[in-house]
Length: 200
Image (cartoon, rainbow, N blue to C red; front, side, top):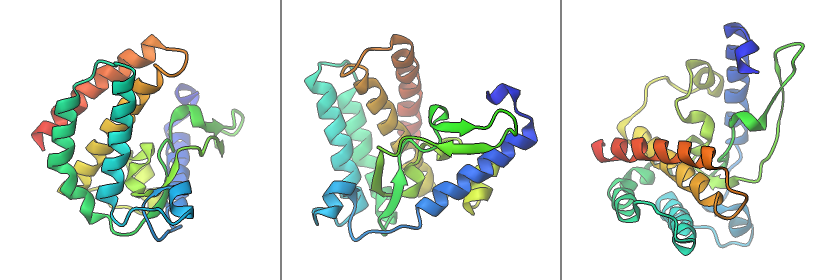
């Protein structure tokens, strides 16, 4: 569908998506973590603690299925770069998969955004964890009311979130019907992301 859209239509969709992810993120909570954890008063006091626990959980899921991944390298980089997570002090509502093409509905006649599906990845954390901020276009950032430049800490967080999403994408293949093409793509991108992490 994206190939059929004009650049103007695509910018309009991206601005709308940026506005929506920002609006969702205006909801705040008293703690970090899953919706259920926070609802039951078991949220974490710091985003660093919550995200590291979340990442460790998916790494252990992968280990349980004997998935071949560079675990020690990932854990080392997570530990080394995690201080950047301390810059997030307010737990905001974020849909981790927000912006994934398969979750975005476009009206074929108007070329405009008509809906978003699947909010199952929602949690209380950092708005930048939403997938739409991975290589976000200027239109997305404009719609979200964000600057086009990033601080070093924001860049670190974006790479950590990318690594988490890719490990999750690989791991889920072993718990469902495996899509080798999707897994291969995620592994290739994970290798690139880990290299990025080592350079930060």
